[in-house]
Image (cartoon, rainbow, N blue to C red; front, side):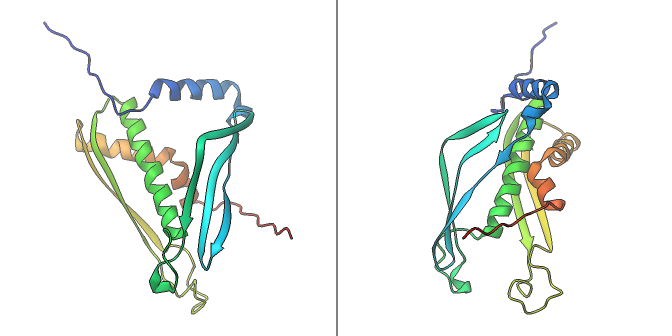
Length: 187
């Protein structure tokens, strides 16, 4: 009788993630992170945000490099279209977080992925932003995520992977639950 070990490589170091979970269980204060960005006005509605430093594991941390993101509005909004709109960045964050979660959960469950594509759509009525109708909210009225996943797994196993990713996604939580936002002005 031949036996073989199933080797799955989705590029996620699950052992390190599980080790971090165990270490942070024993030292919960180190689990407190603060993510940061700064944003500079460039011209018109064009802005440039940077992400470089954050706090976590009880000390200041840095990415390997500073990431820069241009944001603007499209020409149909009388802007110069120098970047994605801020509301599109929210969709990017949601899609990225859920997709990374799918890869992590699949790796942990020994499911080999061949391809994962998330398509995220957000419906928005601009009457809110433009002040036309105060009863219309400024943000998304609804967001839909569609996954196309090719993997060595049954449809039920893939749905369970996506459900677990959704359950553990920080951005999904941010988008679906209220967060306290404090705005301070310095001059």
